[in-house]
Length: 297
Image (cartoon, rainbow, N blue to C red; front, side):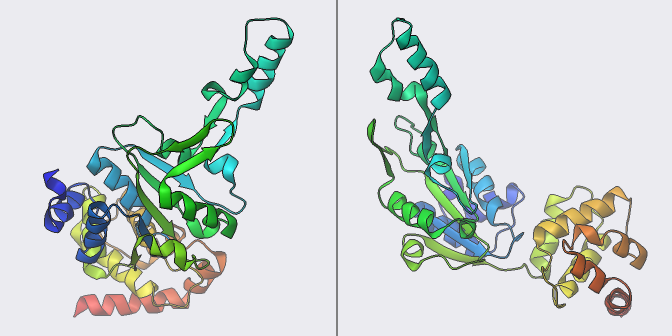
C-alpha cells in the first residue's frame, strides 16, 4: 500500500483517519509493520494506545481482534474452550441411537474460538490486527503463555493438534504500567512509550476529532487541561478525557470557557472523588485565574 511506503505517507494516512501521531510513534508503527514484530505501547491511561490498533486495522483493511486483559484471564477465555452444552447434547444423541460419532465430540463444530485462536486461524488470506489490551492487568502466568504464543504464532489443542498461522497477525500490545511487564516479552516487540501530549498535539487532536469545535474553546480547553495535569492528582486526565470534556462543552453550546462551566463539567476530566474535591473551590479559582491572566496578555 502506498500509504505505508514511507513514514511520511503513514503519518498522513493516520491523520486522514483523525489520529494525530508524532514522528516517533509513526516510526514505531512503521518499523513494526516492516519488521513484522509486535508493537508494545506503554503509557498512562487515555493517551491513545488502544486507538492505534483501531486506526491501523482500518488503514490496512484488516479485521480487528481484541483481547481485553484482566486479573484471572485464562486459556479458556483467551484461546479456546469446548462447547460443553453441545457436547452433552451430542452424547444424548449417541445414547439414543442417533447417527452420530463419538469422535465428533472434539471436532471443530464443538470448539469455541477465543481471540488468540481466531487471530491465527488457518486459511485466512488477510491476517487480522490483534490487540492485546492492558496486558499489565493479566497475571504473570498468562504473560508467560503469551511469550510462547508470540514466538511461533501457534497453538496446540490436545484433541486436535497444533494450529499454526499461515500469515501471522499484526500484534499490538498495550500497558498502563500498573505493573512491570517481563523483559523477555518486551524483547519480542518494538517498544514505544506514549506520553501525555504537548499543547500543539492535543490541540490538533481536538480539532481533528470534535466536529465544529470553535478554535477559541479548543485552545482554552487544552490550556486548562495542560495546567491541570501539573497538579497533584490521583489520576491526571488523559487525551480521551479531554475529548470527552470538549464534547460535553459543545453539548452545552459553549464557545469559550468560564469558571462556572468548568466546575460543572469536571466529572468529564476527573474520575476520582478525591481529585474532584481537591480541584473545586479555591484551587479551581487559582487555575482559572492564572489561565485568564495568561490569555489577557
